[in-house]
Length: 120
Image (cartoon, rainbow, N blue to C red; front, top):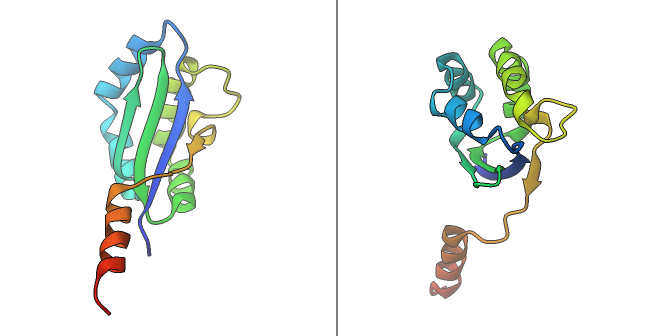
């Protein structure tokens, strides 16, 4: 199964940026365990000063990751706790991801270039 890189964005409300940072500086241990157990790999979240959130993770099966987290009680609690921080969401944040298309990856292009240059 091929590892897929996933990038998404969300928007934190003005005035909630510090609280969002604090929450993510000490994510609940059972939430961390659930993410790991449901296959979220190399997961990072970046936050711009204006509240733009960019998340990145790698997965073998995005839908299985999302479904796995949706089935956990800790995810429901986490999403409820985080919901007040986001701009205009009528669903939990993990259902409102705006996915970004990957248009460049250095390793992929280097691999293609070296394969194309290899003698036949």
